[in-house]
Image (cartoon, rainbow, N blue to C red):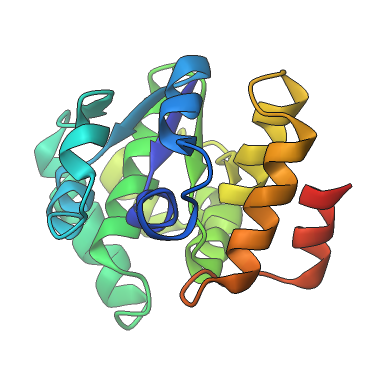
Length: 182
């Protein structure tokens, strides 16, 4: 299983979640990939070089990537960043090749687009008619899945919830934090 990441997940692993090395734990269970646009967005990350040791850079179909990302960026009035758009397109392309993957983002707007992109006629013209529904999750969903598979303990998820609650940039609902604490 591959996790196709946008920058929101890497930023959470870098800035918000410090009580455990979430990225290292994640890559013990899953393969991770990012498109070059996400790599560029994360250059200022303190630990991106450490993370990149365990990340594949998605570089297939550059013409389709460029055209579809430009379309998504413009179609959604720049509310969808190029990193999110490129990670979403990478997930579509992987799915079209029969590669089981999840698009992982904490960007609400990107998740809304992921929910309905398989019906977008222009995307079908760019990427081909067989765009399937994209599987997606966020950082908290990823943490819960790692806990379910025994990679993270309940105590760790409680500490993560505490850190996220104290943090400044990660957006969450009380219900999501309660899931980490339950």
